[in-house]
Length: 195
Image 1 (cartoon, rainbow, N blue to C red):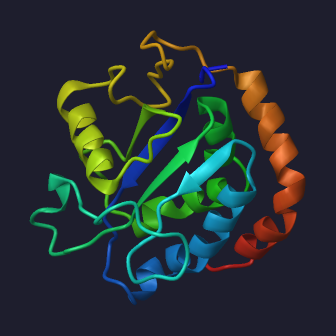
Image 2: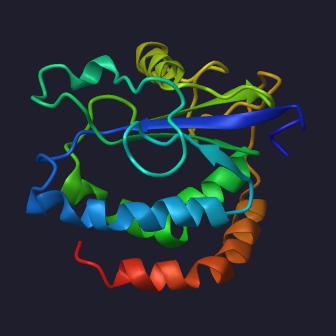
């Protein structure tokens, strides 16, 4: 297992939409967002996620800020999320199967092609709740320095001890399979939505 029982895995992602809120071009994203949040909450290994100030749901983990990649975009906010998981395999099982995989399939329709990493992973002490500024700093660090134990990706993962890590793909498949029965209703719902 990639965690050591004393650490959790944080993920921050950031993108820019092809249009403003309310634009029909991003409607598919907006329609899927509640199902994605619910699928995460039902997924094995999920610890918690930040909410957004002024939006019903979990509290925001600090003031929401954005990486420098938003500059010049014409937007003052952008789709981003911040969550914590028990380990890499649990997060990967959620991210690349079921409800979230359905969203990824359509993401190129909603988002501009990024010149920055779309996500960053890093280990946090089990008692630590990362805030938005920490996620932004880690994403910018990944962009500027490549994958390191401080800020990494699924393609170049690190364990909590700072060593390079080999993802247990068999475990990812087993977790995804176990998650699927508890998310069948959500998956049926998102598959009925417009892309």
